[in-house]
Amino acid sequence: MKDSTRSFQYEKKFEVLSFQIDPQGQLRWGALGDLLQEIAWKHADSKDFGQNLFDQGFHWVLSRMSIQVRKLPAWGDVITVKTAGRGINKLFALREFLVEDSAGIPIVNAMSAWLLLDSGSKRPKRPNQILPTELFPPQAESELLPEKIPLPSTIDQGQGFLVRPSDLDMNNHVNNVSYIRWVEDFCTTCDIHFSDLEINYLAEAMLNETINIFMANEEDSRIILTGSIDGKPVFIARITPK
Image (cartoon, rainbow, N blue to C red; front, side, top):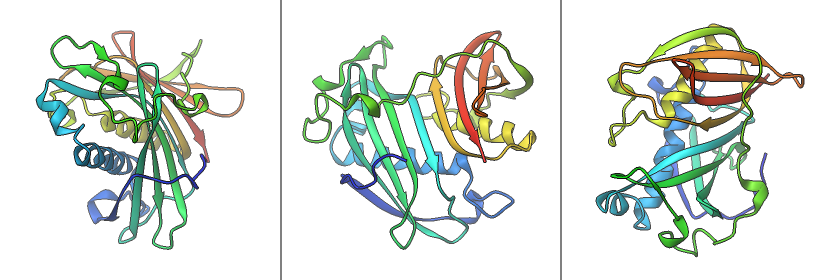
């Protein structure tokens, strides 16, 4: 877990609803991703670098994310989701998340790295030219940047996932949460339960393409999942089994 004593810039309470839970009555990883994405957008929009940037022809793309879960909330629980900008590392804008239960106890912590792209050229723009310095310091602490996950040398056990219209966001791109949901579904099928998730987004998937997910075991018991289209890596994730 990252340092949960740091102050946060924006927060919102949510109730865990019936359609967000898994068969064990806990919040799904995909639904957790939805909440983190929602609070990031709310914060950005409240400080004029959300919808305003979209209207100017820019959009945010999630590049890397690391999520550590102590406990997933259950149906009916009221949780507080917090977020804050943690600075800029080259082209990455870093954003931290914290989820607390109703007693104020941290149950989820996450760190993310985002790229700001020109919607026309698809080229990245330096975030220090756009973002307010009081929310995103020009120099982030280097250890906050989520790791670049190495591709495994060997893979085993594949499963295909079709990119459907429901996976697309308002930019007509595959929503970053869809990748988390595919990881969750793959692990559920393989009866793998995990507490930590790291994910790197490598390339864009398109509607009606099939992403094939392959598994590889690391020596430290962690598992690497590689999502590929026609042999080209689209994302790579690393999980820590319970």
